[in-house]
Image (cartoon, rainbow, N blue to C red; front, side, top):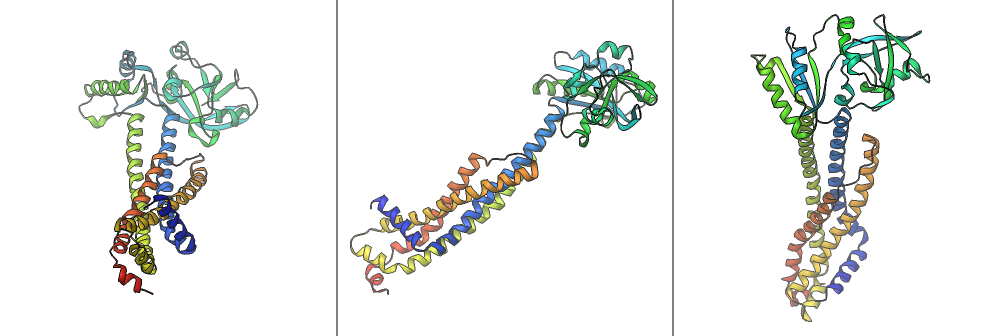
Length: 388
């Protein structure tokens, strides 16, 4: 039988029953669009989490210990000794203080860091200069401020060279960090950095329990973590007294979680595709009953079983493909809207997921259309011709 003629007959049959055909397609439309929307939003969530981690900086290693023993110098020197693996290291302790400029006061987080604080924590300078190693060693009272602090204390005034007061002590602003995300609404921009050697003057102690290490690569990150854990294991008998971890591990874990979420949501949405397939089978059975006489005529003039089966399979497959196409369009549109609404980003449906959903919908149509098609092909021509 000519495939083109069979396809034309299928389209004509669908066109003759527009409302019924649309209702049949609806299950496939809902199924395909649901899969696309659910999986795309899960991937949008994954991208959002990844973006937040990357804003903090990849290949970062956080080192914490809890003890009255002061390991500041030893741990700092050990981190510096891994120059083949790391780009920089900085103490990462902080405390909240009222920071004053003239008559303005703003409470913010004051960080005590080294000259590599920007490298380790993924900051970039907008103006001025970064703290130098010489200023750290000399306990210089200099500060680099975040964009939120600049906005709150200085507004449109150039802060470079201006003097601020922290706990009554004068610090000269030498630099301003670029905004990371959201200005005063984002904690990373609401900060002041001073040399960590000022911790005695502001905190009353020289002990530092938190360090951030920036590794050169993902491979270097893993090697540096192992060395740091090995070093700390010689200082503590209990592994609960210290912690060494990286954001790379957190990114991998979040990716695994979102992949599982994607599979679960995709599976749940995929159930509606099966429901849509059952709807196709139901309508095709009705169609076989309505067209019994037509089938009898075709068999009487020489149509073979495979011709009848092919006709109904093409018809059910066409319904599925059309439903899948509408589902792609609707799912893509909803994904764009929800992506902008929830994540403030443009999320496009995954190409492989989209193609997979359409192929699966086509398979559903063929699978659930086979039984009615096979039943139609077995009709006796004489009995079929008697059907009114």
